Amino acid sequence: MFATLVGAYPRTPLAGQPFPLRAAYGRLERGEIDGAGFREVQDELVRELMGEQIDAGMGILTDGQVRWEDAQTALTRGLEGFEATGLLRYFDTNTYYRQPRATGEPRWTQPILVDDWRFADGAARQAATERGLQPLAVKACLIGPYTLARLSDAGDLGRESLTLALAEALGQEVRALVEAGAPVVQVDENALSLIGADDEAERKLASEALSRLTSALDGLTEHHLCLAVTMGSAEHAGHALLFDQPFHSYLFDLIKGPDNWRLISYAPADRGIVCGVADARNTARDDEPVMIWAGRYAASLNGRGRDRVGLAPSTGLEYLPRDRARAKIQALGEAARKAGLGKEALGTEIDPRAVDARSAALGRVERPASRAGGAS
Image 1 (cartoon, rainbow, N blue to C red):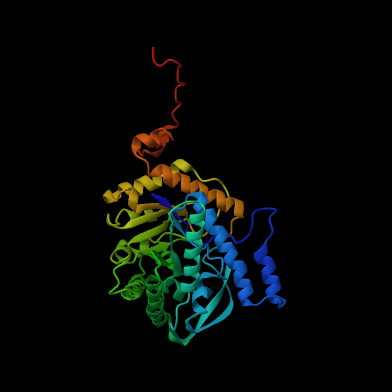
Image 2: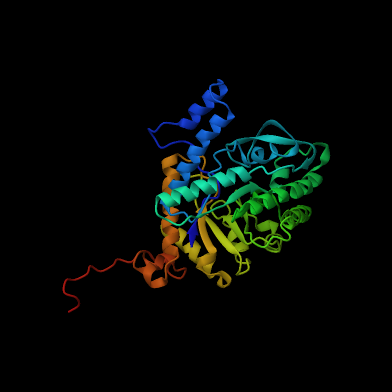
């Protein structure tokens, strides 16, 4: 079992530490540094975050998405056929994004995220070498076509045409990432949580978009695609929409979308499941036995096994204070380590009843004090 971020991580420093990125923004606006100089500051933050994730026990890494203004702009800025407009609220959060507007059919002309992934991979390898460890996988993340279209102004194109055009364009970006060597590419489709029980047209559109996206990898055998759904439950999207697609693993928000457990119960045994069990919108400490139970339960469903299960935050951690985000991933790393243990080994580290569905409600075991000299 492993732990991983959903994608984003705080750019802010620990309390009392300098904030080079904010200073660099000011210098960039005043013309004291150029884009290359600003990127060097971002590079240093990526290096720092790679080490922080490794030290926390993460098994799959990300660059924290620290270069992104938001997930939408990160891609539409590199596609033809978009312009930026006003600010809109992101789902039902208190954060806002600059809404993209389609000015024509979106076209992919060159890789958008490949250079960022390559740098992150190199930074991760360097951080592992400095610690005497083997390099860890660095996943690439991007917003999916269905979600990007729902969050955009489709203009004269119409949302259905925009969705399918984005599926073709983003499929080329996914292929470019795979060909560059990205071992895992995560497609974030949070808008699947907006599909209602009677939205058959939306299910059909989302399914067609994901089919077109994944077909871009036809002919490539060495790749791993992950479909991530946070910000709610995708239960009404339906298990067929998700599991009939050729994704190798799935990440589900189990804090805001506990009904996603129903979807997980349908996941074929050969598909990986990443459980979003650490509350990314709350600074409180997460319950370790609950996280362990979630991982082991997901592993037990359909005989999946612990090697195909991971633990993660419920969504991005970018809005938490840095020290709380670090505490979250440290707790996730430790929970994943314990959840991967055999039953007897786990029982020596945690009350075994806390991760047994038959007895979890009975309370904790008071272990008897050991007696010197052994039993009488």
